Each structure stands twice: as C-alpha cells, then as structure tokens.
Amino acid sequence: MSAGAYGHDRFKAGASGCTYTFATTNNVTTLTITAGSLQQVIEGLNLESGTYTLSWTGTVQGKIGAGSYGASGITGSITGGTNTTIEFNTGTLSLPQLEVGSTATSFDYRPYGTELALCQRYYEVHGGTANAFPQYFGYGSNGTNVGLALPFAVTKRAAPTVTALGTWTVSNCGQPSADSATVQGYRLYATCSSTNTIQFYPASSSEKVTISAEL
Image (tube, rainbow, N blue to C red; front, top):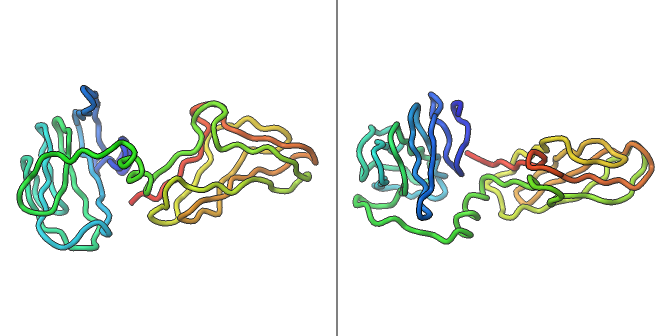
C-alpha cells in the first residue's frame, strides 16, 4: 500500500507505505508486515489525558504518537481530545489494544456487530454485490436529475466524501453520481437521457458507493 492508503478497517500505511500479508486462524487475524509501517489514528474524542498502554501479540514493535518504538506493553502519554497515531513496524501482529493506564490487560473481545458499527463511523460501502442496494427505479424527464436520498448505517464522524465507482447497469439515464453528503446520508442520482422510465443499480463488486470520513 502507498503512504496513507487503507487496508484492514481503520489501519493505513505509514509514511513509507506498507507491505503485509494476513491469515486468519480460529477467528484471530495475524498480519505479517514485511516493509514500511502500519498505523491507526485514534480519534481525539475517544481520548482523555493520561498514560496509555499499547499491547499486542507478535514480533513487531509499536509506538504511541511521537514516542519511540518498543515491545508489546509500551506506554506513552496522550493529551485528551487530540487525535493520536499508533504505529507498528515490520514483523507479525495480532490482537492490538490501546488502553488507559500503565498496565496491559487481556485483549477485549467485542461482538462483530459492535466492531462493525465502530468502523462505520469512519467508512462505509453501499453496493458492491450484484443487484444490491442502492438501486433506483422510477420516471424522469429528459435532461433532469432523478434519484434518491440514502441514509448511512451509522452517523459519520463528519460529512464524508461519497464516490460512485464502476460502470453501473443503467436504463434511459447516465451513470449515477453521489453528492449532498451530511453525517446522516447522501444523494445518489443520475441524469435522464430521455423522458421515460429509468433504472440504475450496481451489478458487480466493482460497482458501489464508497463513503469515507476517515481521519
């Protein structure tokens, strides 16, 4: 991945990019980072001032903010309300956890649905599978924009960037566009090519709308 590009949810490549592979065994995913570094930015709204401990399983070294790299159980000071980056260098990595205090505790397992909702505060995808939501079927006049307002599964951190990707299946209209995003939802629309019944929908995994409010 190039610098700043995202891979697994909420984790992105560091300043020199990142190369890694991953494998899941018994529901635990282990990353093997072979070049660069992997980062996650922790939103300041989730942080209070104090000492924090970063722990994980594996051979990587990690750091908190501008601190130095160290082995699992490394501590650092964080200022409340300030976005803070945790970072891992090369090696193996699983079960990372940042927590308040100076002592590492056992990994805090959360339900899949809870973890998904936490990630969707920053990123969400609509479509991406054949004939999947969102889709539009209706009637429009030639040259006018028609579409629908779509809500997000989770309220976003800030008004996100919404982008319609791929070549959608369309009838009597152009390719759809996405705009008018708020923290609650956005508009998906297309321009009619005739006064007629129109339709547009994603028909493959490459046809989707990406919604990003990442840090």
